[in-house]
Length: 185
Image (tube, rainbow, N blue to C red; front, side):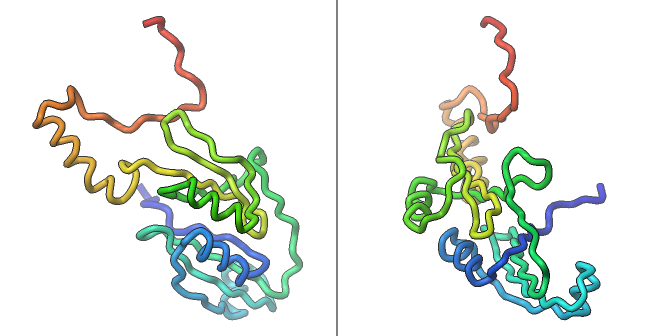
């Protein structure tokens, strides 16, 4: 298979400092570096002549990369994203305590598109907007979805099997768009 995984997510921002404050201070992404992309490279990469580009690199969790791009000297187009339009819908970020983060974001005046709600699988989710209106989904993951959970869950399942405390190992629940038909049992 030629595709081996996702490399990064790139988000164009109108004010790099404001967006860095949002993504680093409020959401807790780890700042790595900001680089200046030369005119020559900007033309090669984006086909834009005579622009200055600054790119900030941020880590989400242990290895996922988000790049924030700021293009200086480019006429901006409105990018009012919504959940129902074709195209990239949102960036989903895992959180461990949605209630605490949500309260912090509300105090900072962050716009919530959808207040926190619970999925059929038990996870809680909320939708917010970044300073430029990009949509972010915050999803509270169960321990089994977290890094520590991925390490501990197999041991926990084996312990349950060995101690007879479970008839079978539990696989993760699936989310479907349409409800399964009721078979009357």
